Length: 132
Image (cartoon, rainbow, N blue to C red):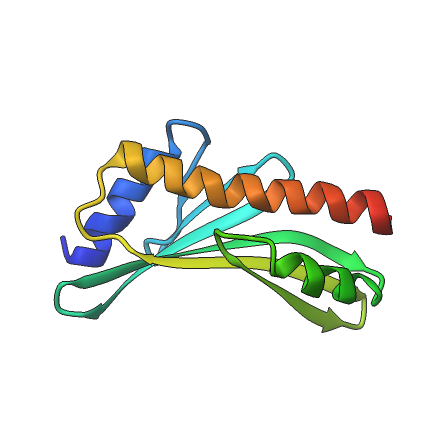
């Protein structure tokens, strides 16, 4: 198993402490934190530098004015970068967080991942209360 596969395996074990996790054909992990769909991908950027990337779909099909709120809220977060995607159906909000994963054990890795996804869930709740 390569380094990114080992990191994804550690992430799977960490996430399974809290969630049902699916392993996609390409090795990526997918799970839901409440109503929030999440995915974890692994990549080896350089020898000895394996990175996990967590992508969370926070909300979708929101009105365009949600983008301004997201821009203001983005500066308050420590774990992840909020982004906005505009489509024909409305404004979608994503949270992305990438971090070096070499040597992380499942327990501390689960803490880190849950910090990110719980932040996404909190942002989702705030968005839905304001814009739906």
